[in-house]
Length: 316
Image 1 (spheres, rainbow, N blue to C red):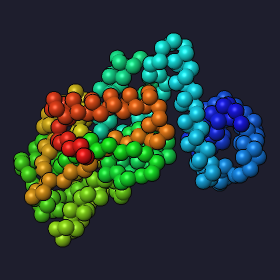
Image 2 (image 1 turned 180 degrees about the vertical axis):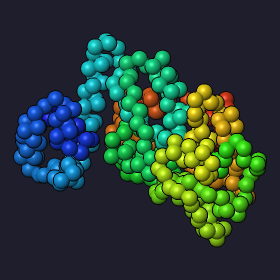
Image 3 (image 1 turned 90 degrees about the vertical axis):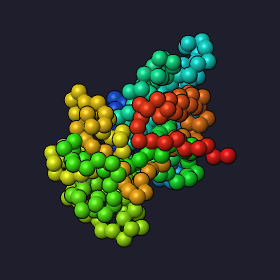
Image 4 (image 1 turned 30 degrees about the horizontal axis):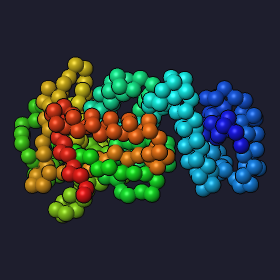
């Protein structure tokens, strides 16, 4: 087993296809297949389940993937430290963000890291709220902002803030202020499907009140749901961050072309946490990016740059 084989193997796992990995690595597919066969022979166990749509790592393959990621990250950080002749943060860090959160956090985070840690290369990926925790736990992302996440053996979790889910209406919507759940269920809603956190929390609230679910459409796309609101097709349930910067030259709040109304009598909040894979937690570079992300979120909440959120008290 050598480092080249490990890099090839990681690429195959992450792309889910030997042919796609061959193209990305500029390696002939038969040669890549032979590397996999050599690994399986050396380790005396199958590493992939092969199917018509690509390959999927076996349980043993997942173990190898996690260790390979750790080894390769440590190697990259060591190379960077030697090249710069100083032990400073360096290397690539993959950060996963929900689509709505990325609208307020992605650019500020890129700016902070570029200014303070020029040798760190961020790789920002957008995922649905349901996919983010899985991506971190399986090391497809080093760290991420996860929503309504449960304890998981594959990652460390730090609760950061609660984000309010509000009714999103067009600016010509007549109402202002909180709106009752009884009124909301009479409106044509455009909601994400399961297992999106907004949908789950909303249906839990409906169940508590014994209220029916009424939809005009479902979409996993934040942009489509907001476009439907702007077109007068229906209403959405989204956090304030989802409306940030929506449309050309638009700012926040009602200037964004939307009215945001809290749900009553009990506002609806989702908990957001910083999650870091166990492998990433052993990396000084990943730790520094995580600390910078926490500090940035705290600063944005305190300054009002991120609205509709409240910090979570630290657990004793």
